[in-house]
Length: 401
Image 1 (cartoon, rainbow, N blue to C red):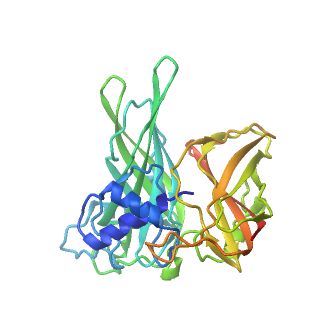
Image 2 (image 1 turned 60 degrees about the vertical axis):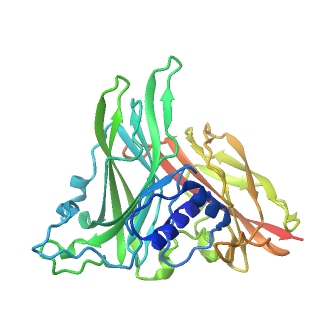
Image 3 (image 1 turned 120 degrees about the vertical axis):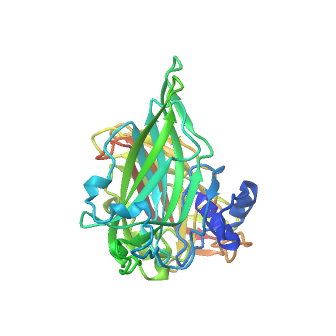
């Protein structure tokens, strides 16, 4: 949880203002990020980036009015439409040297029909990765068949601010990892191939399959290319209020947050327990520790970032994590072991506008919730790639004043 969701918001606002493709001034975006808070409604969506220095390199009017790419039978169909009707097994890239992990994705697509995702991509043995992937393909799947594709009329690519090169003690390169973000407006296959069907994706439950093609540099200076896919569930909704892709947003019902919290809603071996003080002074930062415990019988190996802190009052989320630069904290835990992490909240409410940093929360009774994102190399996912767990625990009572 970090302010990088706000980086996407700031970039989106610039795209809507300026229209055509452009390059976002990083310092300007950072300044806006510092002012933004997490109040999001409508069909805004979020895009979590793992590096503050990420730069939007192409935004051809990604978030315009709802609709799709209607191409008549006499027109030239974008290549993506060749995927329409294919079984999902023909779309997913086979295992190889490229390992792609979905760090965050928009799990509810609103009327804008725009899906957003962030991936961590590792290439085994690669000495260097480019500033952007060679190609990316996003398709919408239902009942095992491709029913929607990236229409090509709006794309966003976010390049990594930093890549991580893994080396042995003798200097041998074992792999390189980068984080990229991508956005695509999804359109229906119903219009293909005669152009007479509705280009709008019908509301309902689907899966998104994102396949990334990467060319990398080998230690000997040669180049190689590979592909990897990730799959995620997504709900398409006509309700603009469903643009929020999680209950961890300002104004969301506390009941929705509660439904995602605790060991039953988080069926993973690692549990969280927070040492939240019972009282705190209004306007002063709240600091406490969170203990992660591996309740399972096998070791867990991986990393996490800063833990997120949310506050609820009167049945609504009223405080979300303040923007912080991402870090990689060791979250490895042998079976039965515990590890302690620091957590903090500035105890400020949701922003009323872009220029409002959020006023200090007034005295009263609140509930505190904590979240943690784990990127794990053990246990791995079913496809052999790193797996991801998002943990939500709480609430703990807090009185301000």
